[in-house]
Image 1: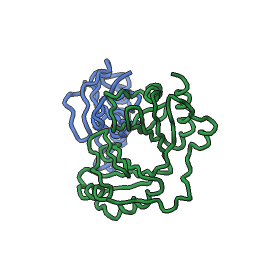
Image 2 (image 1 turned 90 degrees about the horizontal axis):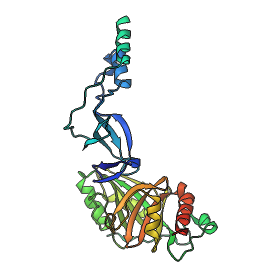
Image 3 (image 1 turned 30 degrees about the vertical axis):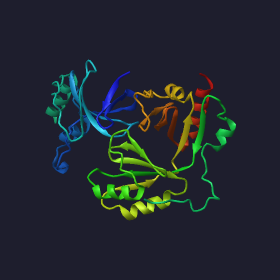
Image 4 (image 1 turned 180 degrees about the horizontal axis):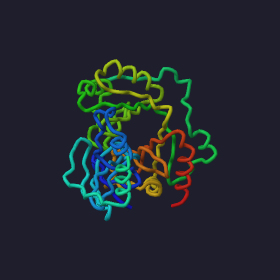
Length: 112
Length: 195
C-alpha cells in the first residue's frame, strides 16, 4: 500500500483515500469556437503517455476532497513531488514515447 | 456568545440507529456505543473572509480551527476542521436552525452554510476496546501518538467513510452518513464482540 502526502491535510494517508484524475495542467482553449476539429479532439481526448515523470492531478476523495498535483514516475511509481493547485512543478516531465497510434493519427491527418 | 435552548423538547430527533440498536444491542463491558442527537452545520468559508470568521467567533465563542485536522470545543459547540475552507459545527439537538439563522445574520461576504443534520449522525464510541475497533476498521493510524485528543480526520472506515475525532484517551466521536448507519452500527458491534 502506498502512502501519499496530502498537501492540505499535511500528512501521509493511505492510497485508497485518493483518486487519480489523469494528466495535469491541460489548458482549456480560450476560444473554442475557432478551433479545428483536430485541435479540439486533441484537447478533449488525447493525453501524454510518458515513460518516466508525469504531472498528474489527484484528489483526496475520502479526506479533505481537495485536488492537488503530483509528479510521478510512471515506470517506478515513485512520487517525485506534490504541490498545491496554483503552484508550478519543479520536476520536468519525461518526453512522450512515440507509438504506432501516433503514426496512425498523423497518417489520418494527411489523408484529410 | 449565543445561548441556545431547544424550543420544543417534546419532539425527539429521529435517531437513525434506533432500530438497529435494538436488534443488535451494543452490550459489552469492553466498549460503549451510542448515537448522539446533535445538529450539524457545514460551513464553507475562505480564509480571506476575515469579517465572517470574526462573526463566527462572536456567535460561537470559538476561533475557527485553521490548523489542519484540528478541532475546538466549548460547552455548547464543537467545530471540526474538514478542509482548509470547510468546517463542521456540531451543536445541541434542535438548536441548529437558530444557530444557522444567527450566523447568517452576523456573517457577510462569500460563505456558505448548509444544515446537514438530516444526512449524517454522530456515534459516541468509548471504552478499553474502542481504539482496537477503529484499528480493525480503518487504515488510519489511531494510536494516541499520531491521533491525539482533539484531532479530527476524514478517512475510510469499514469500506465506507467517516469523520472521526478523539475526545479522550479511549473515547471517540464518529460522524457517519445516515444511509450507512445500520451497516456501521452492525460493523462496530461485530468488531467489538471479539478482542
